[in-house]
Length: 335
View 1 (cartoon, rainbow, N blue to C red):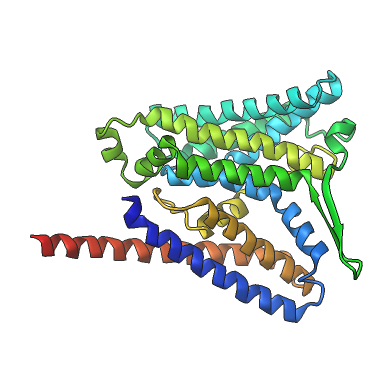
View 2 (tube, rainbow, N blue to C red):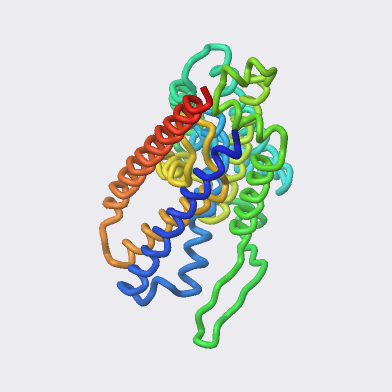
């Protein structure tokens, strides 16, 4: 089955790469500030949180589910970790571990509700997202935390380099965490038995169940993994802005889903690759940055995201129809 879907991955990613090259050329000609080292580095860092979340959303989409509660999970875990660090003096690694573990637990709640209630996952996660956000605002009163410890807010720079012209760039902690998440997610989905089972579950849940794949265990893995990454993303986001705001992650759901779908992940499951997701992030980042440099209203970017989702879904639907038609013709020839 994966051999059959391999050409879809290659064609989708190749097309996306061509679009990115064309867009880069257009913005490079339109603005002299676009294709600079410092702008590129800032762009990568600014989209690090989106990439981390998109990696988890990609895994859920491949399994055939849709989870939109990740922003609420990130907000809750971020605030609880901040409270632990500021009020009780919890050090760095235990606080980060607390956020990730709590995120994984909240993800597993989504998995259990989806499995035992036998309800479409998007309905479950809409409900849990509302509950998580409401409880967070209720217990915190919408208060913000500004006195984060130094280990959380201090800028960590692994490498700094400068060109002869004075342009410079830095490799920072959010970039390193983003790369590690991308690599781990790629290995999970392409090199492990669990990854192959996730693709099988998304491609045909009934067949996956018949061959003995434990669906609940896989759902706990994919939703728990997204929750874990949401906890990590919440830490990175607070590290970048030096504060914790309960509603800071609110409204990021659409852009994160957009990059996963742009990268070739299907809303019906069984399709997509981590490389495609990275290209999806890159395309949206370039579009947003280029439009900002050209002075286009930021509200127009939501139009771009909506159009990107519609186009991606349309292309995926056409591709799947062609695959089904080819398989049907092949079966008729064999008969």
